Length: 204
Image 1: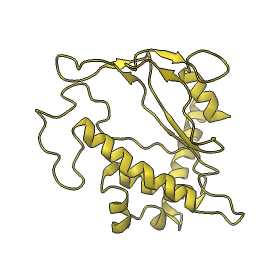
Image 2: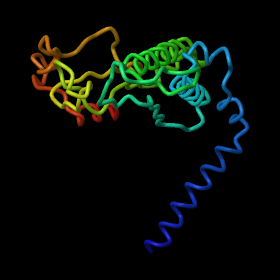
Image 3: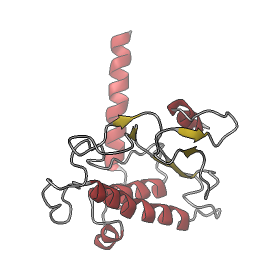
Image 4: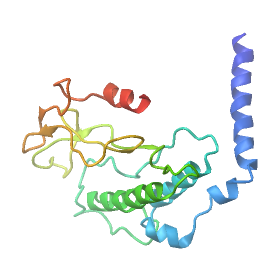
């Protein structure tokens, strides 16, 4: 019955959480070394990337890891004239520059560590891991809005793919100088890339 299936699903989820918490590897996986935190940018995003790396290295059954950059979705005063100073280590990023710096400072060492860490067969963690860095929309090109920000813009935006068999060092597609319109698709379909194409790439 539906009720028994719901119970089994809930119980499986619960037991999976218990297995994760009681796994002897958990104390290492969820440990944050102070020097590594600095190397990853001393931020929430950096800490999350350290934990993501540890989960991948442990190879304990994790298939998908989601890392969020807090306050990435900004719509007003993105350059910070009216925003308070960022504050001390661990404070929330506030301006566009802050969130960009936080992402850059965390993503670069994550990719380095995944590339440098090898399995016994000689492959790297990056070889077996697809890293996708993207948002859900582009941003309106041109002048800022009247409230000093940018809105969601589906016409053009970018994504970064690394590892998992991706051929690196390439830029696929091109927009006009304003970043408003895709003028070259960058692939054989001769059309813009849509979210379903991104999903198909991830699954493949």
